[in-house]
Image (cartoon, rainbow, N blue to C red; front, side):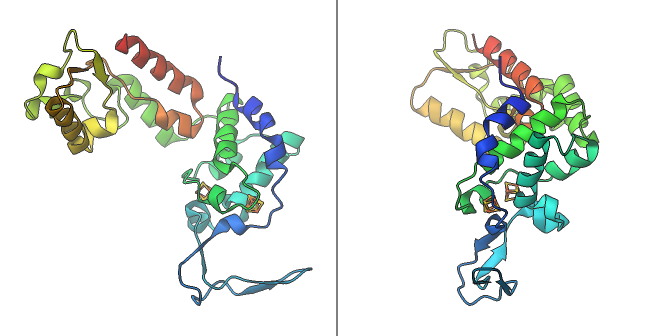
Length: 241
Ligand code: SF4
Ligand code: SF4
């Protein structure tokens, strides 16, 4: 049984408390040393220059408020652990705009695993009973109805294979290799699926596409809906047997 979001958050407590709110994770080096930055800040110990640095957290840039930058989220995690803050739709709406790009983690001198913390927070939010936002609920419905989040017809999942003359690999009995294609390659970036399948063919790999393949669950892991993601994972494992 997978750990709950709150359990994961508690495991990350030491990391969360390493955050000194320096906000270095907000910036990235522009590659231009003399590029105008946001100016200078004189603190207790010294003057910090931000020349050459640019804002680089997409969520912070979009919304501007402290809570949306990573440093704010680390303090939200701390407040949840200490019991000073409870999960709510407002907290959810602050935590969700992060695109989990990991830029803040790369910038943090304390090497705080920010994305793990943010994803644990998201899982704990869902577990606490706060509902999904409308767009995520729509994705959930689409995956339940059509097995993919793009709204593509379930029966057209392997249309790309039929169009590319690769139909013989659909449910290819006796093949030792199963190619899990995924929704994005099946419905959006079909050139990835076609090229991969043709490469297998050229290499003489006897592979099969599995007709019952469903969404891998990644979008649900990202938004904290871990149970839905695991259910999809189980379905795919069953189908691959
Ligand atoms: S996460 Fe790291 S870089 Fe960001 S405010 Fe905290 S200590 Fe500073
Ligand atoms: S992972 Fe989230 S909080 Fe960190 S830089 Fe990317 S968008 Fe911002």
